[in-house]
Length: 324
Image 1 (cartoon, rainbow, N blue to C red):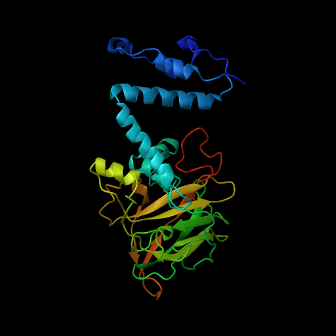
Image 2: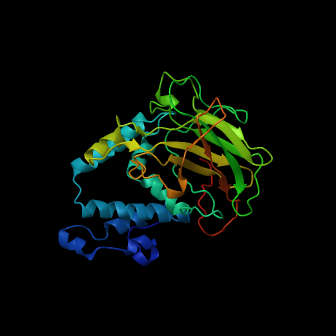
Image 3: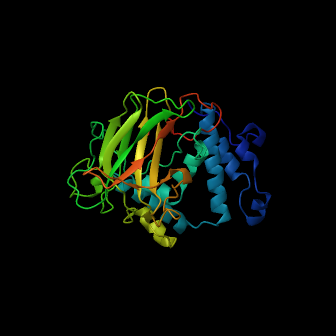
């Protein structure tokens, strides 16, 4: 159905974001009502959340352009960076997401949506960004097995712990622990033709007592791919591309909100200056010496605390809901 909205409707009738108009625009030769007209063009059939978010986006983008007196050449350069991110993105590399990561947008959205969890035992485990290298349908593996395949070097690590309800402490049976990390060369398997498919990835299901266990490697710090728009932006900003050593997880269980998170190695020198701003204090861990195990020199104990759907209704709870 064609929109019945008219550009000349009053600001009071349009979205709240249209009320903020800079009265100095007319003095600068700019149409002080232009942004309001664009926002007011939204039709009556638009959903309220779409109206609010897109209206606010338009308002802030227009303000950004005016504040910085954006030129056609600069606008086209930015547009080409976005277009190039789209052209580079594949099923194994999400350059658009990486571009958002290096400006901190994904980490900011994560923090806005889900309160940064504290280290207190009665809080759910803190979430952090998914990152661009997760793959669907990682292989399901037996409890206690290894995700490491034909990798030379690296410190073998036995990781173990429980998945529990953060309020009651009760173990969660049947929770899925989806884990992935890079090889010692700093590459995920889809970036590296020398690694077997789905290397250093696996999915494990918790036992009745909520326990999980598997062998992995102590992760290594690595540079994010810098051959695309994200790398170009980092160079323009005189920033490094390094991420601190970390292991990725998605923890999910029936009746619980899925958790997307990472664990970071405390000894890594980039803990304080992650290129994508994803480190949270409660997710920084220590790899400990392990004895009596010929398969691993280190161990990493960690319990994941999940919030049930409806827990803390109306407030942020530190976990990620919805499909990752």
